[in-house]
Length: 288
Length: 286
Ligand SMILES: Nc1ncnc2c1ncn2[C@@H]1O[C@H](COP(=O)(O)OP(=O)(O)OP(=O)(O)O)[C@@H](O)[C@H]1O
Ligand SMILES: [Mg+2]
Image 1 (cartoon, rainbow over the protein chains, first blue to last red):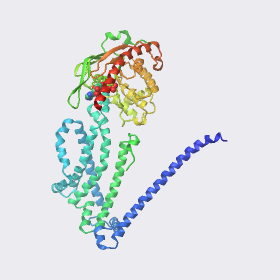
Image 2 (tube, chains in turn cyan, yellow; image 1 turned 180 degrees about the vertical axis):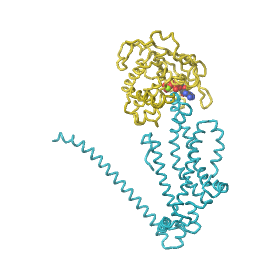
Image 3 (cartoon, helix red, strand yellow; image 1 turned 120 degrees about the vertical axis):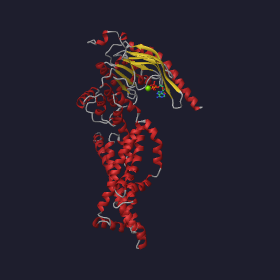
Image 4 (cartoon, rainbow over the protein chains, first blue to last red; image 1 turned 135 degrees about the horizontal axis):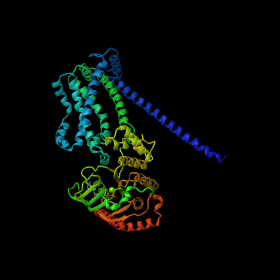
């Protein structure tokens, strides 16, 4: 009886430890979730209470219930400048097209300049100058040059996205382990094959990290472009709301933008996990 | 042993060497602009099919010698020839196992091993077949789809070995390939290396810090002098019979004799290197 006890205890102990750990984890998740909900209620409720029934404050600051009503109205009846989904689609289209082109250009230029030292030296001062000017101002230039259509917004997005991706790609090329390049070269790789099989995958750790920030820039570029001149999109919606003293409208557009950004973030994280699945898990780290 | 290969029909020394370094000097320019002589006036020949081990204190220029033979670096003075041809650019037909892990972490085992044939223009079907064969030969069958971080250190070395050998190099350069492994794994890997080497019989330069490993594997052991400006101090011919079993050979009388001789030559160089480094440390400290 006493001799047999420890043997059986080992198995059950391990199961016990595992289930206890699972329980702790679930408990923790539930606590965190309810704390998050609680925080949201406190913030929104506080906002609602501070604004109260003061009509002036409602006009100036907006109020959560008003924002909610505004969203409902927009979804149900459309906005002053057309159906809501059209505005979302317009902004998304500008942001996505610009994001894809800007990212592709950034990767291409970063890798090329990283691989060809001569080009890097020639271009270096120009890139430094271009990077130091506040590029958002270029939006005005683009609207003047290309008109109120989608092109001026896409161009602004490209310019905003390009530099972040470019610098990361360039740095990524610089950080490639020399040993990997030497190994591939000995195995018979041409310069192009070294770029494709060694440099690009290695630089992707850097490039993918920059995509999270870059998509934020893409949204900013599209909105600001619409602000500076346009006839549709969420930026236009915000401008309209501001013009009619509708703070709730501004906030409601921001809520929509936030949701769009969150969805994009989800897909970029998926892409990241797909592209970087060769990395050991502890390097990937927890998502923040 | 039973079927004499054509390599032994002529004495090794009379034929054209596979690797021929004549009075080679290699200087590096340091970032500060001064020059550092890594190896000076080094002369070394390795015959086709010969297994040559290089031992020497740290910093004496062993890795540098290998990069010169592979064509990754070029000599400041002297002549480097492989199969009678001067080394310009990357030497064709060499395999190189690097001192640090150089298996690509973003490629699976299969994709790593397949690189050599693919870069050399083999079509995909044949390349996969040959890669699978080599993965099996180094004992990794079933691990084709793993990424390097999912393998143990010893398994990663096997991948590197398959990656190099699949090209059937006539010259194989190995820079402390097993130094990161534990003693038992190292002995096993050494035995397997000898078996694989026996199949295609490349000329090998095998750099190691482990004198026992050098003697157990090699036909000749080269001792280098301490750096800067390392060069060949002595060459010892290892006349132990093959095939050898690495774990057992070290108890043989002849092995122990050779070990004592070579250690005698090596010890003074290690002492010099050590006193240099501690001297430098003291300088840096004061
Ligand atoms: N690219 C380089 N630039 C400057 N100095 C270098 C370079 N490569 C090697 N050296 C120097 O040349 C000397 C010999 O280096 P090497 O790597 O050949 O030594 P080693 O014998 O392989 O040493 P270890 O046993 O520690 O690997 C070292 O002092 C090193 O600092
Ligand atoms: Mg070395």
